[in-house]
Image 1 (spheres, rainbow, N blue to C red):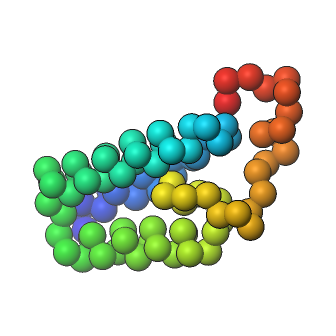
Image 2 (cartoon, rainbow, N blue to C red):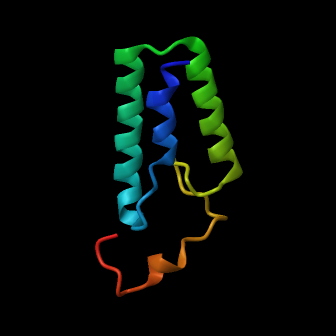
Length: 87
């Protein structure tokens, strides 16, 4: 499971607060994962563990899924603060 150390930090990268950047973020993360899988060729167990973790995070709508934004989950309060610029 040595190859999991390169995949698990991807789940910890936060989504941007600005909804206009969600598509760019999801495309970047998708291309990163695709290029990682093609270049490093992780073992089947590591790939299945990562895909299971990704599925559970996205299915539970915790708000950290980089594939899409769950409509049931709300944005943090700081997302609506006009004093915060560039986040």
